[in-house]
Amino acid sequence: MNNLSLAELNRKIENMVRHGVVEDVKPSLCTVRLSETLVTDWLQYQVPAAGGVSVHRMPSRGEACTVLSPSGNLEAGRVVFGFASLPFPEPSQAANETVVLFPDGARIVYDHAASHLDISGIATANVTASSSTLIKCPDNTVDGNLNVTGLTTCSGGLAVSGGQGSTAVITGNIEHKGTFKNTGRMESNGIVADTHTHGGVMAGGATTGKPS
Image (cartoon, rainbow, N blue to C red; front, side, top):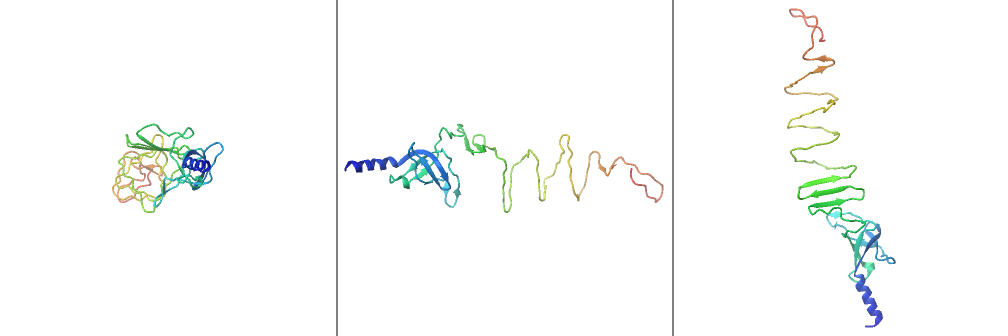
């Protein structure tokens, strides 16, 4: 084996596993900086899943990675990820947490010791279902305004409160079926139902005047 072929063999062995950082990225491909003077061509990068279940996640510029080239030819290499670095440290050091951190600060944390899921840092969220959704929980709280654009059906009872310093307001026609029981003042068009009086009261079959 001459010196040239030995040098070529050493180069191929060295190139089989190379560590670097993402230099540039586009869908499905990225370039990797392996040294101050060496940047790869566009290479296919690893995604979490690419089959019947597919996951899209583009790597970040500066993200640590490894180029695997089984033949020693960098042009045929594949890029794999999953290594924390100074620019991108792990988002948690807790053994009981699984954390996903996004570039805009959005964060998903599941604490499997407390069985608690926390999602924070998002601006909007949308869930679209073609048939139905089901939430099974004995106690639910909405901290903020709630806008329902369709029919609201309550089969287990309904308790409505205006809150401190507020009044519950219902706009539109109301049709009630069943017994109606009220505790407290009930007023309609300025007339209080349980304290109003009638004028023009006469014995016999005459009718009273309008309530006042």
